[in-house]
Image (cartoon, rainbow, N blue to C red; front, top):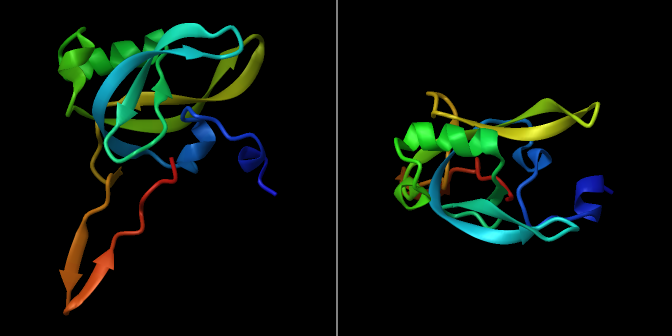
Length: 129
C-alpha cells in the first residue's frame, strides 16, 4: 500500500507531483478553512484538476510576480509551473511545493487529445491530482 493513498488529502501535496515539474493554468483562488485549527487560507485551483494548492506567502508572492498583479482575480488563466522540493520547517526537512514561471520541456496540463494515423491518442502525462 502507498502511504499517500492511506491518508488522502483534499489539497495538493508534493507527493502528488510524482517528482515532476508541471505547468498548470490557474482557474481561481478561494479562501478556505485549512488544517486541524481550520485556519482560513487562500487556495489556488488549476484548470482540469480537483485538488487545490494551499498558498503560503512564498508561493503567493511568486504567482503575483508571474501574473503581474497582487489581486488574485487577475491570476485566472495565468500558467505557472509547480514543482516538488524540500524546505526546513520546525527544525526538520519536509517536502513542499514551489511555484516558478513555466519552463520549456515541462509537462503542460490538461493533456490534449490528438488524432494520429486515424487513431485517437491521449497524451498520458496527466497527473492524478
